[in-house]
Amino acid sequence: MAQTGILLINTGTPDAPTEDAIRRYLGEMLSDPALVNVPRFIWKRVLKYAILPKRPARTKPAYERVWTPEGSSFMRISLAQRDSIAAAFGGRYRVELAMRYGNPSIMAGLKALADAGCDHAVLVPLYPQYVRVCAGTSLGEARRCLGELARTGWNPRVTEVPQFFDQPAYVRGIADSIRSTWLDGRAFADAERETGAKPKSKLIFSWHSTLMADIEAGDPYRDQDEATAAAVAAELGLEDDEWTISYQSRFDNRKWLQPFTTDVLAKLAAEGVGDVAIVCPGFVADNIETLVEVSEELRDGFLAATDWRARFTYVPALNDSPALAQAVSDAIRQALAEDAGSPSR
Image (cartoon, rainbow, N blue to C red; front, side, top):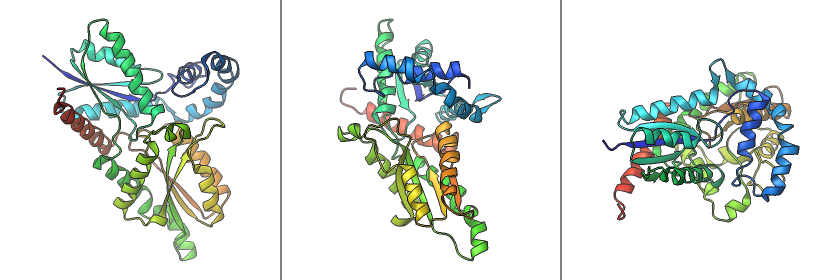
C-alpha cells in the first residue's frame, strides 16, 4: 500500500555530554559549508588545530547542565514532538525524526521511510522561520541523501515544508506561553508590593542571529521574525513600546543581524526597566542556547546591571506542547493540499 512518510529535521545534539562526543558533533556542524563560507583547505586546518581541540572543553559544562538521566533533554523533547505530530495524523503517516548534525542522521531517517514502503516523503525542518543556515541546509542535505537513495531504486514524491511562522496555532502557542509565564503577574509581583507601582517592563523577542550577507541576498529570515513578533504582540494586545526584537549568538566578527540581545538588555537596564521577559520563538525545543545562554547568562548580566528588585523571565519554547504539534501538522496539511493542487501533479 502506498504510504506518506514525514521526516522532521532539527539541528541536533551530541550523543553524550563528553568532550569526545561534543567534538564529533561540532566537527560535523562546523564542516557544513552553509555555516562557514571559508575556503575548505583553510577552514579544515582552523577547525582541526584551533577550534576542535579547545571548544568541546568550554562547551561541556553547558551540556552537563541540561543533560538528564534519560539523556539529552533536547532529544527527549524532539522524540515527544515526533510522537505528538504522528498522533495528530491519527497514525496514518509514518513519522521519523532526524538531525542535521549528529544522530539520528537525515540519511537514517530517509532510509527508515524507504524501508517502511513510503512513496511520498514530506520534509519538515523544525524551524518556524526560514533561514538558509538552518532550514536551508537541512533541506539541502535531505535532497542530497534522496539523490543517493535514488540510485538504490527509492525515488519518492517529495513535499517540502520550509517554514511555519504564520500558522495560527504557532502564534497562539507563543502568546499563551508568554501570558502564562510572564503576563499573569508573577514575574513582578514582589517589586509591585514593595514599591506600590508596577516596574517598567519590556518583552524581548530574541532570535539566533544570522549573517547580514544572507539577509542582503534575499533570505526572508528577518522579515519572518518581524512578522512573528508583530503577530504575537497583537495576540497579546501589547503596544509597540512594550516589546522589541533582538538577535543573539553571533559566531565571529563578520557582519551579523542586529541589534544584539546583550546590547538591548544593557540599554534597558540603563533606562531603569526593571521587568524583562525574553522569548526565543525560533526554537521549538529548549537547548543549551535557551537554557544556558539566555536563561542563565543573559539573566545574570541583566540583573547585575540593575538593582536587586529587577526581574528577568525566560519564556520556555513550545517543546512538546499541543500547540507545537498542531502548528506543524497544520503546516504539513497545507503543504500537502497545495502539492496535490499543483498543475505538475
